[in-house]
Amino acid sequence: MISSVLVRKALGFSALFLVLVGCEKPKGNLSDDLLPEGDILSFKSTQGAPFQWETIKADSIVTDNLSALMLGVYNDPHTGTANYSNQFQVRLSSNASVITNRAEIEIDSVNLTMAISSVYGSEDFAHQMEVYQLAEDLNVDSTYYSNRIFNTEQTNLVVDTAGMLKFSPDEIVVNGDTLGAQFKLPLKKELGEYLLKNSTDDNFLNNKNFAEYFKGLQVKSVSIPGSGDGSVAVVNPSSIYSNLDIYYHYTSDPDSTYKYQLIVSGNSVRSTTILHDFTGSEAELELNNTGEATYGLIKTGGGLFAKFHIDKLDSLKALAPIGIAQAELFLPVKRDVMAEKFGPSKNLILVELNEDGTLRLLPDQLEGSSYFGGAYDEEKGGYTFHIARFIQQYSIRTDEFFGFGLIPASGGVSANRTLLLKAEEDGLRPELIVYFTRL
Image (cartoon, rainbow, N blue to C red):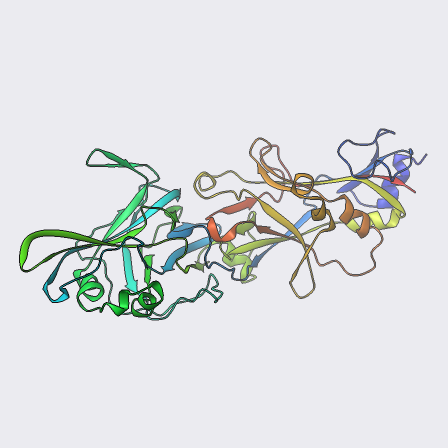
């Protein structure tokens, strides 16, 4: 039996301590069959600031052909501005009509409609939208990253009188019919003329020919939101409401009305470009080494990830050999006004950082997410990770440890920002508790 006084002396610091908690093993551990029936001790991060945080600029992420397109812009005082724009192919409909008498076609209107699955941010924020014709091919075999800038033609295709656009996730009613959430952008007639009047039958022979003639569209918001404002729509490219509709008539029959519909579909090559600007934000202070952010900062879309160390974790090595029964890491979040609009992330991934900044998975992840954790728990107010296998290996490691990293999951189809508490606030604090026995 080892006394708690001797254990505290062995650790030799006040922020972390060992407590003799008795012989009953904690529930939900991995090591019931591996540990002897001796006394189980605990190592716990407590008072002060035992976690040392750092904000890291994330690498760009792959954003081509994901299930959703992200569109819009928001400005967060902690993590800066993020602007999401889209590039996508427009394809021929399977039941498209044959275009005849091109010389007599007169374009009446052109409308781009895109389905909305959900909206981050304020539904009252008004976007100034711009649409451009792509000047480069979108290739299904290419990989497109979130920081990719695409070549476009110079003309903004949105009509001058279109006004501002607000994103809403609500259904709409048109002529008595209830339709899914969507937004509509009126485009200039010149686009319809290019597609219908100036084309040939060969251009519309198949989707390959059509993509060579019309490479696709870019859609973006050029609005500049104030601090704490903005919105981002989750756009569904596979919806029946995502279309490019061209309305026209023939000069020989001015009273006629026709519609030619081109579609955006799951087969459309597509990509989201995400541009981050940290100017004036707390993130800028840390990235430029000119100050410290109030919270640990995480931002999706290739924005930011958090790096942290746990002070005195090496003290466990002084007690080796030990057997780890359970190791639970809890990371609480700050719930501010922006958190109701843009976060926190539904899931975070805990990794180990290598010396060169690359990431290494923890061995506990092999047990699956139901054990490892990482899902945001609204009731607890944070994220819980179980890292017994990592701590077991760490207790006997001799190589240098360069810290933990926290990265957001689903970064290409979400607009979340997460603030992690660095110290105790509202009764919550970051904490690591390790239950172990001396071998």
